[in-house]
Length: 75
Image 1 (cartoon, rainbow, N blue to C red):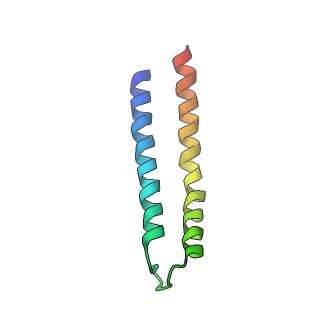
Image 2 (cartoon, one colour; image 1 turned 135 degrees about the vertical axis):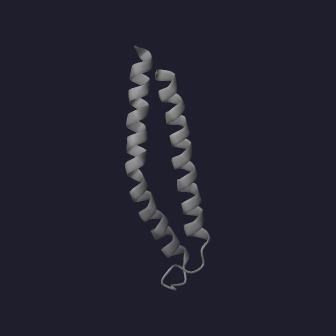
């Protein structure tokens, strides 16, 4: 059971990492947003910052799960 938890944790962590990188790349590489506003480097950084703020929630869940797995594997 514990080994399956580590494997599942690794898969889900990889999924979140790839999702974060791909959406961040999308925000950085787009020239115009949905409203037609031309994206300057400052606006791109703001978009990535907002995306990062929302990304903290799954990051905290993954960290908690990691600590739980570490504690369970020591027992």
